[in-house]
Image 1 (tube, rainbow, N blue to C red):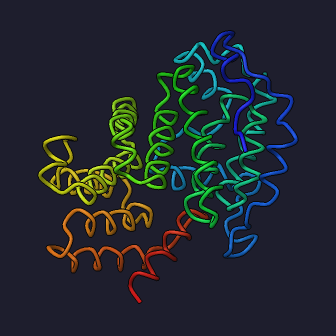
Image 2: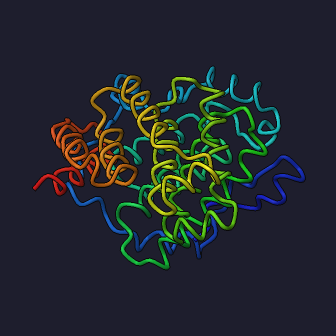
Length: 309
């Protein structure tokens, strides 16, 4: 399953084909599992998407799809311009891709994002990463999906080096891929540094990026859990204090987010172990009490509920 068209060609020509997905890739996505908590709970049809956008995107500060926003993105990342259709064509496609993402129609979100060309890869990659991490039960397929997202986003950040969301989703994909091939193996391959650098770049470009702070908090916690606090600090710059710092920053930016809180709880347990199990359980309880606004938040609320039973 590939998320991209001809990315190597895109890098050479700054142009991506937006007319064909490829039958093999589309067929693979038709077998993806459905979101398990209802078909119509998190639908944002018509103007509802725009009116709820600030709540839905408080974590990443991604601008609402619009001609003005697209123009600003292309001015900041001119290599994208030759690959982007006219705004009146691409904006509705992006809106529908995000509607599908928030509703939990992850395969549809991937396809619709790809139809928009490289400016749709952020939503496509997020949808694929969420699906793989939360719903795909087959390990080989999960790793294959995440590997493809990593490769796609690696190309995207070269085309769009000033797009915070591109760097974030690259770091997210690298982190999820590393978790699934084993963190120790990923560190040996140098992926840990790429995770940290990508997420920090997202924060440098968008200081209010709560989701990138979450990713960095998870990074520090995962490394500490796998190699121990002393080696983590000495070899990888991972510290327990950084786990708390990044998650507190994320919580300040996005209060009452079940995504922030569930990952905070898990990372506290990983980084502090038996030293702070009570704190981890408390934060899972806070996550479980949140009101989810979309499919990802619902998945994390259900995760937190399972941890507090």
